[in-house]
Image (cartoon, rainbow, N blue to C red):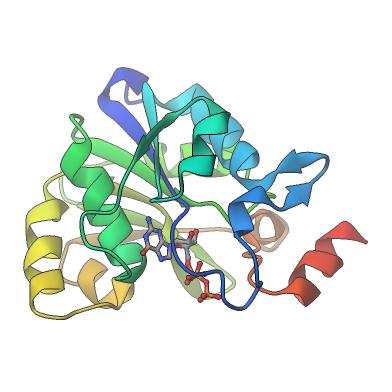
Length: 190
Ligand SMILES: Nc1nc2c(ncn2[C@@H]2O[C@H](COP(=O)(O)OP(=O)(O)OP(=O)(O)O)[C@@H](O)[C@H]2O)c(=O)[nH]1
C-alpha cells in the first residue's frame, strides 16, 4: 500500500448546511461530532489532516484548519483549497457529513492507485461519490481554471480528469450514507 507519508486527508466542512439548518460537522452521532468521525476514519491512512472551513469553531478538533480560497463556491472550491495547500501527490477527500464512514472503505481508494487515475472515487448503489475520493494534487490546476470559468458542479470537474471508480457492494454501501436533512439524521439515530 502507498505509504501514508505520501497522503494528506482533506475534510470538507464548509457550505451552508441549508437543508439541515445547522452546521453538519458538529451534529452528534454515537456521542461524537460528525467531523470527529471523519478525522478518525482518515487518521490511520494519512500523514496530515486539514479541515477546510472558514468557521473557526472547527479549531477545537485540534487539526489544521484552512480557509476557502474561493468563498461560497461549494465543494469543488473546498477541494481546490485543500489540494493547493497540500504537499503530497495523493489526497483523501472526505466530506464531514458521512458519519458512518470507516477507514476500511477509504483504504480501498488507496489500494486502487495506479499509474493512470487522477481521481479515484467511491461508487455506492450506482452513484458516484466524489466526496469520498482520492485526488492527485495535480488536479488543482484544472479545478482552478474551471472555478474561474464559473463551474460549480464537482462531478463535472472530476470528469475532466482521469477517473476510476471503486464499486462498493450492498453491505458496504451503508457506510457511505450522506446526512443532509433532519430526517436523514433521525434515520441513523434510531
Ligand atoms: N470547504 C468547503 N466545503 C464545502 C463548501 N460547500 C459545501 N462543502 C462541503 O461539501 C460537502 C457537501 O456539501 P453539500 O451537502 O452539497 O452542501 P452544504 O452547503 O453543506 O449543504 P446544503 O446547503 O444543504 O446544500 C459537505 O461536507 C460540506 O461541508 C464550501 O464552499 N467550502
